[in-house]
Image (cartoon, rainbow, N blue to C red; front, side, top):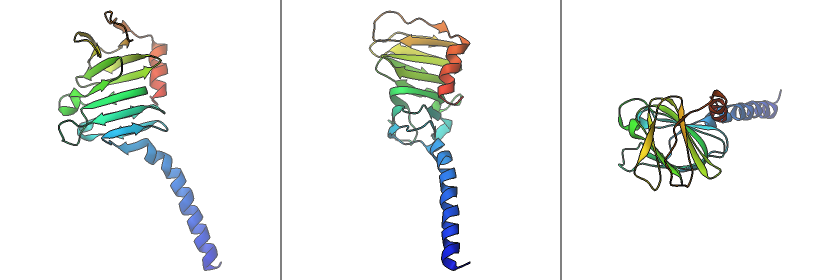
Length: 175
């Protein structure tokens, strides 16, 4: 075999290996402060144990207001994200803001879905406070509970979500 043929074969094998590794690299990414648009489902590993799973097509802007390198806030403009934060510590105070709602966590695993003119919040583990963007009063969700927040002004209704709805949302997030 000539050296040119060997080089071509090695280059082909290397290129193939890169194509196989590429989806895994896209799936696990650093936690960029600023705007992220997830072309495919993506998992962001943030400082202080915060993990964000973005649905394909999710548009998210992370903010680090205190300059410590870890986001305290996410502006979600569309689709769904799953948030996992450890109990205690700075990551436990993470919040997600949408056009309709503000959801703040106290060490938990929860999902936010912003689309079709409403924001839906569901708690897998822990507790989450949710309020309308233009209100000061809100509700606290416990595990298995969710709330749908539209552009209205009425009180928020906490409901236990049926398994089919939970499964459908979590499936969109690879869970």
